[in-house]
Length: 157
Image 1 (cartoon, rainbow, N blue to C red):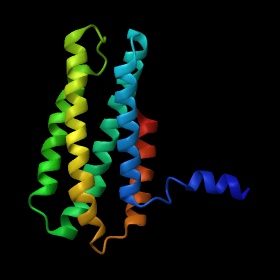
Image 2 (image 1 turned 120 degrees about the vertical axis):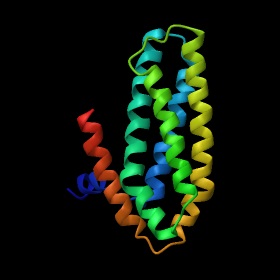
Image 3 (image 1 turned 90 degrees about the vertical axis):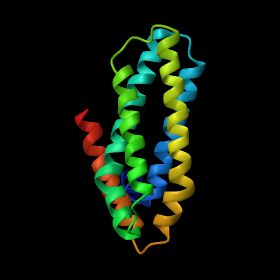
Image 4 (image 1 turned 180 degrees about the vertical axis):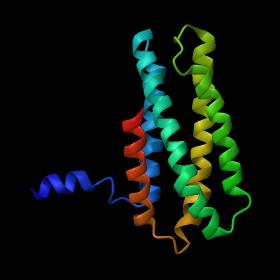
């Protein structure tokens, strides 16, 4: 019984930045898997998962993490820049979501998306996360809220 409780609670027991870092790693792995894939069907499945993961990740950050950090830091630069980056990423997602991975232009869009995400992740992990952790925000509570909302959104997709 204790094992089942521990397993189901593990995602909810992460601090906010640990949960977001885990998402970043998962997406990075998906990009790598895409790059190594030759099958159109496999690429399509990977892109579908990538789009879902990126969309949900951006939404939980925008709804929960960013507003909390923006308030705590009284930030007028980092969070607005991150939101603009999300908007650009959403445009790239719209270009590939539901499309057939049919050649070099599609692959180029995924490559650009990968580079864009890599840049965004670096800024979050090197700048936003350390600053967020230096505030009095309860990162465990924030992590639980992110995890709960992520589960809701993934279930709805």
